[in-house]
Length: 140
Image (cartoon, rainbow, N blue to C red; front, side, top):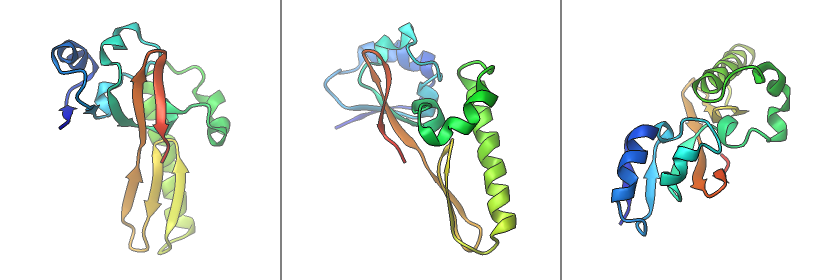
């Protein structure tokens, strides 16, 4: 058995107290507002969700070149848009510089794979709401 919360952070915080805490509970990226150590997220303790590595593991050494550019952006949605822009540029570079080749990009939005025919897939990170904020459980 498991519970899947298909709502945003506000909705998940409202319904989580009414759900069985012993049942494994999961959510999508909308369940995390992108703000670590948000006191309101205490209601989501132990809920697992998928999201961008940039938000869940910003300390990753591979992300160091982007920290300065994103430093003045607010937490949350603006950080998501920043990560999407960085990875969109990386995908465009790969498609123009290595056409018809398989390419893997370890991006801010996840592990992006571009197939020989141009098909794109992306693997996200797995996070969990913990007592001291959001915890990265598995990187892509």
